[in-house]
Image (cartoon, rainbow, N blue to C red; front, side, top):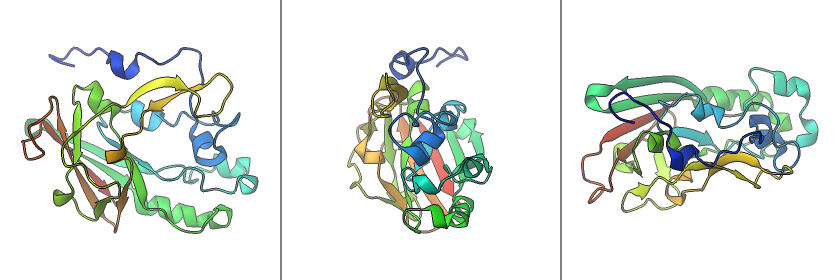
Length: 228
């Protein structure tokens, strides 16, 4: 994207297959792999429908439910905790900074309202970063700056240098649905296992267009995420 003219990134979106289903939010969160994996709104709509969410958070909320305890009434309940809700997204273009705020405490509260239907009545404070929107905007390198974050820990041992963003869409078989589903791929270990150690938490994420010489090089964009 440049000069106000936008064209979707071919590496990011070029492998989406027409007339194929997508992993569903209910499918991913409740039913898991198989023929019910496509149920509900597309899980990627959380990020894809808001292209300015350059880096989104995907909580570890899949496969935590007792399938036989979940009813259609539960799934239709607006408070059913599929994933964290985005409260706000603010940009300061002149500073090349943006801030996304997620309602994590609210999500946790709703989980305990359905606690009898959880496999384990505990909160899993883990999440991963979803960065294909950043890649679509031309930011190809990412790094989680733990030093300037608060109550954030990278469980997968933080990368010592920026990591290339390879997130893209394709039609794969991980959903277990006959013929496959459109979904995001691949996993990026350096940003796939992050946890918050307290709330509110702040994650500072550095983005670069070209590979920087080190993590200390000034980023082209800084994206902050607040978990409250």
